[in-house]
Image (cartoon, rainbow, N blue to C red; front, top):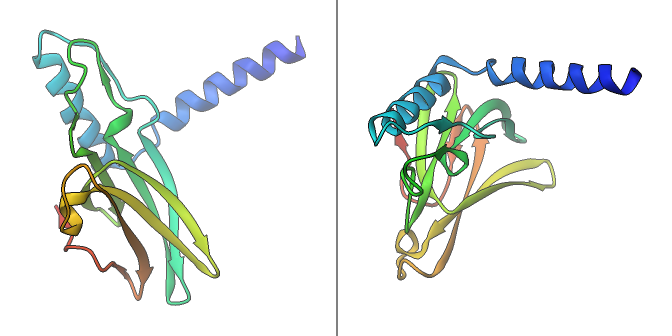
Length: 154
């Protein structure tokens, strides 16, 4: 009985946390679901696309949401959300959505800094698309800093 209750509680908790997304994240999810539905009446699954993260440096910290479109699934289209250069990675900070085409991401702790490391295709770094490239972002003085191209904000 105790194990059953724990499993039940875990399911309820994961269901509740799936709904605890910002309006901006929900908007991204709703658009992706609509795209899926409009393509041969597909069924959409958000998967584990939304993550809460914290970025920071000695010059400040910020809580943010990541919406990783590589985690989306659509029953009628295997590659609806990603292309050969990667999938969209959306960072939401204080209601502003910033997006990158990414092949993956990871948080890296480096001393006092928490850095968002984004895998990019080589074209973003002056190479061929198949080459490996990375972009690092850090939060500093209430803004994202990177040496890469300026991110797209909405």
